[in-house]
Amino acid sequence: MPLPATIFLPDFLRLDRAELTPLLRCGDPLTIALYLLLRAQCDFTTGEIATNYPRLQELLTPPQPERGRRPAGPTLKQVRRAMDWLDGMKLTARKLDRNEAQGTLRIRVTGQFKKAAPKRLEGRV
Image 1 (cartoon, one colour):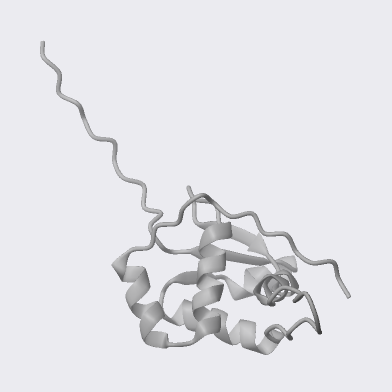
Image 2: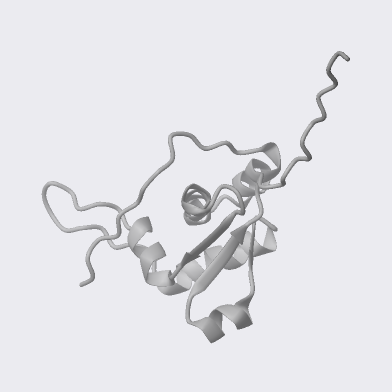
């Protein structure tokens, strides 16, 4: 069994209506959790994340309880289905042929990562 994956979370996470509306309409808890995980783990300037499916499965698996067995996490098929749904809702983007050739999972989260043009300050002359 692989070692548990460690997750490092930001202090806050901002979601826009354009992201929340399709997520809440899909109604799938795994898809919502996967998007929040990707959004929290991606580079905030570009929206890109490089990971793999076993890491995503481990991060989406509930923690070990104080007593009893650890609950089963999502299967590879379930995680891939959730990724397909996120791609279909235009919340993420993957280049499947490039990912397969490189042997990694590169995802671009298409949320609020648009670079705004710097505002010109007009000063007194």
